[in-house]
Image (cartoon, rainbow, N blue to C red; front, side):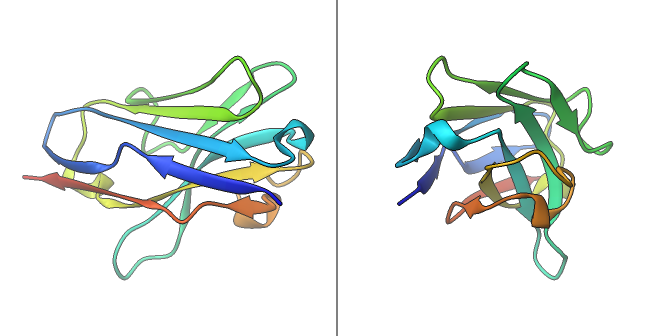
Length: 124
């Protein structure tokens, strides 16, 4: 059974930084990609970033490009999201995701496993 556990969320002021971590347990070796989505109050869940395990290729939403950086650990069970220059609009619950196959990576249907989420709040 696969489990994704996020950590690192919290409260930060505008312009600050946070680093989210995601630890995968279970059949993590079957993942083709891992990433992050977020959901703000009253809004739909949206893609943030993803990383491909085979070649380290990365994808970012336009809204976070240049501010957020996704990276992976050496083992196929850790992924990180470094968030810099945070804005109030980044306030959301951030979810770690993992995919068995590479497909529709910018949409939720592309992912097979989801974490419970971690709250990120950016104060103005």
